[in-house]
Image (cartoon, rainbow, N blue to C red; front, top):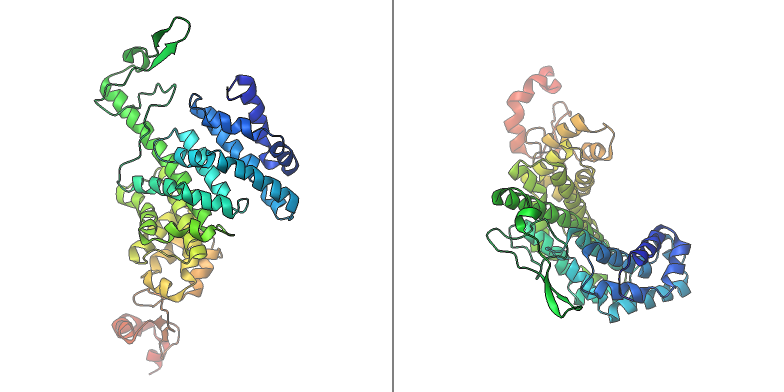
Length: 407
């Protein structure tokens, strides 16, 4: 039953397409196919692409469509809960959490990360969320963020089946995979000469391998940060335990650094900006849903301004949330660079522009203030955050102050 024949994979791919069709999704979930899916997933011999399909099916078959959940069908909800219990009792959730860690095949890794996000969301329940905590699913997601901040990645114990890309560490001789030949009782070597599989010099192969590893790491990081944003917004029984690790300052600091990495390395590639976009969404979700905000300073304002200049909508949403609180807005420092960026790159009446307009700034230092600003008593046209700023700005403001000219 666990053999992944081409016919069976094709049938399961059709079933996976039921994800967007609530009525068909319910019928597929009740078809009894989940046992075949989990057996195929847990069988060690199948390639990553097949396992990724099985992971996707695990969430499709056990997490109902959001629109259908909102209808409040108790009987349907009970049936999906029973299916999720099958995943838990079979050890499939633990396997998916392990597959979500860095070092896994990128396609399988992303499928596992997306499944964790689905299990933790509105379609899950307290039992599933408790299981995710127990099997270390949150830690698996956070491992991607730790890896991106200079800590060693988690490596797989053995190379993936069928991997001919040369993804081996430099200067390590790859092991020859031996497969038992049952027909004659001997062993059959399943490795071709390295020169025929990997043309070019060793340096070229190592560079190619490094690029592929970096690409897979970036893909996993984006998916993990996106999933962490979803976990932060999780509601329902068991969600508080699930997000407990997300409230730790170290977690927030790691995600905060992601929005400054591209500036520090002058990396403005599309992939880097996509990762930064997900990081801003994650910070926004942490703040709005968990009440956990990053350390606010002028460097954060600079990172937001740079992201806005590249057209980041997530940075704009995050800035609006920051400006809603006077103390946070004041901590951002000089808001004039943000105002200039908005004028140059956004619609004048966008939500970000309106938020900046509503949060007045000091005419001298550009800072917002958690308290009321002091208006110039001469013209009432400009405002200052303190008497010191008003005095410092008087020389430049005096020629334009209508009250001064009248006197």
